[in-house]
Image (cartoon, rainbow, N blue to C red; front, side):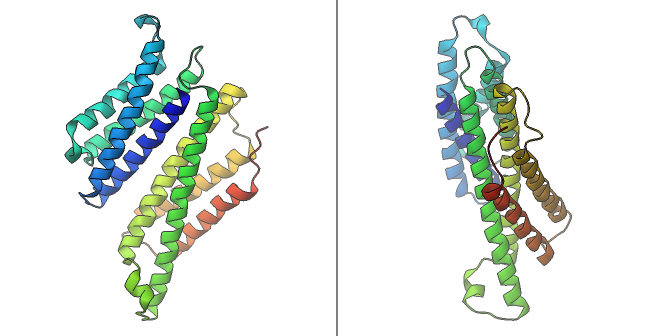
Length: 263
């Protein structure tokens, strides 16, 4: 059941990201894909929920994790039942962000139970999946930042060549860099939480002094600093994009050179 849970959480996260993107950029066509991801996540969460119900010998055997899973399942079922037109509404996105958080809490609580639906090994797999998705989002934001720097340099020098013709506008690149950075920061935060939770369950300490955790937390703080800096301004500046490139260099250094062996 743990593999189904990990798949459901990945699909749920992708659905939230895609629907948030379509809402932020007012692209109705994108809501079809977002709704499809919600349907897939709903199907996977339903499999996990029904399997958990089947494993309970009596109704009174439910735990706090089961209750959190039920609320998360109810939220996503209502979202799917409301139809495609409501998927990108801010109310639905906020409710499902809460539902996603409850589903993560349910997995963490069940990993400590005597008969869990999410073994500790699957919690570690969820941590890895969230970390990989976060790093992928940061890679996209790095690419958009580079495109922004290239296009801005062309405009300053009045070089209206093929780079100018084929790259999106500065505003579009700024929005893409901001959105993917925020997505990556959120996923990295969840990866840190699930990783520390796994450490507490398996190793009986939270891994807060582990070098990998400390460097990852530093990378997260860098991106949070960028997001605060960017939100405080009406438009991105060259310095912001250079800073985002530096942020990704830190992420890449953490990924390639900081040891991942747990103590």
